[in-house]
Amino acid sequence: MTGGAAGDGVPPAVGMSGGVPVTGDRAARGPGAEDTVRRWHADLAWLPAGGMRPGVLIEAAGGRFVSVRPGVGAADVPGGTVRLPGLTLPGLANAHSHAFHRALRGAAQAGQGTFWTWRERMYQVAARLEPDSYLALARAVYAEMAMAGITCVGEFHYLHHGAGGVRYADQNQMGRALIEAAAQAGVRITLIDTCYLSGGLGNDGSPEPLAGPQLRFGDGDSERWAQRVHSLGADQHGMLAAHARLGVAIHSVRAVPPGQMHPVIACSHAYGAPLHAHLSEQIAENQACLAAHGVTPTQLLDRVGALGPRTTVVHATHLTGGDIEELGGSRTVVCMCPTTEADLADGVGPARALASAGSPLSLGSDSHAVIDLLEEARRVELGERLITGQRGSFTSAALARAATVAGHACLGWPEAGEIAPGALADLVTVALDTPRLAGVSEATALESVIFAGTAADVRGVVVGGRDVVRDGRHLLVDVPAALDYAIRPLLAP
Ligand SMILES: [Zn+2]
Image 1 (cartoon, protein in one colour):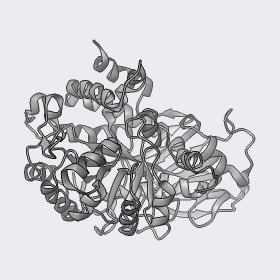
Image 2 (cartoon, helix red, strand yellow; image 1 turned 60 degrees about the horizontal axis):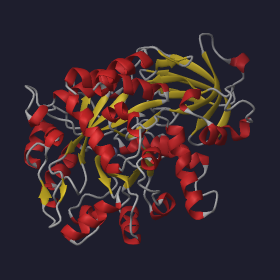
Image 3 (cartoon, rainbow, N blue to C red; image 1 turned 45 degrees about the vertical axis):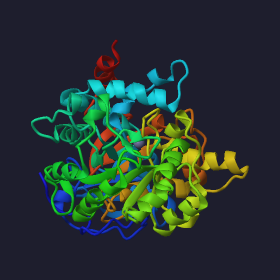
């Protein structure tokens, strides 16, 4: 099913706050958008213009907010209004996910290992997945995300084909499983279809052929990648379904030779689709790129015209000063994944320098070492503190914007991520009476939630006006049972 525009088809206004476009387009609503009018009364809500406000009466119809009124007393609330105790935030956006990596959680911590031994284990899991098992796993993982307050996921998808690279009857069967998984979990998805052509850069700079499980990732060349992506059937605005839109990706400079990048960029232009790429996650990638091409990975992406406001680079951990200027000056978004970067010993990226140079920041749980956007958010600031010896590089509001409006924008949903009239009706309510947060004051509730809250404190989640999580329970999926069912066979000897 395709349909209307998310916005008006122009590239998302990355980092926007306020001025959410109203299309009135029913097809662009979230999953299961409610037709009926719904009202909530938030004890506290974080609003784009007003910051933290008490007593906020929020009304939605057709899956979008129609009015947001702070300062309304409990006695003045209409009948049938749902009270939201705690702090209510806009929906969180997880801008970088590889759903199947969730199966490695914990298992990849045993003993000692490098990034590259982790990657070998990841390939083992990848080798076992088929469309049915991928659907089961992704459904459970996206439902876990919903319980953490994530209402939209950017799935960086490269597990395209069967064993040995053999095509399924529908070449997009794996991608369609992810779209279905998001629907069943009650969240939106941007399917970031990823071009992945080579296994790395050899010592002489030439691309190494895909081997073993990597054969499942490859389409041969980027023209054939583009043909497959076109057959996904996105409309001219890149919509794949009411809850799903298309994104595209250059996996990395290791996996896509520069001469193969243009069709991916052209596909992004054709659909107004977000363009994502892993960038400088490891020093070894920089060294290989310099040896092969004589430039940094950032310079290589710039040279082929891949940078800009519709582009998001993921990690951006090891950059030169010139790289930071090029990314910021081009308004390229940077998606940081601090828990994964810590888990894989990648390093700490220059978040403050990038933001100051002009790059909006978004957040991702990437390998799902944990799924907790609040932790990702605070680690951006805490990483800066550890590196610089200074506090206060980012305010809690700036970190919250990375987790909400900036994340949605870089996934092609600029009409989500704010509690404002016209925006998609997504709400995340964080309980303030939990062991971690009890005793907070209203004035600093956002600071408390960003710096001490966890996914376990998320009590309620509304997506497109519909309840997905209520009283800390997912209404569509038994998440622990679904995860156990999906993961156990993947790790069996
Ligand atoms: Zn990644």
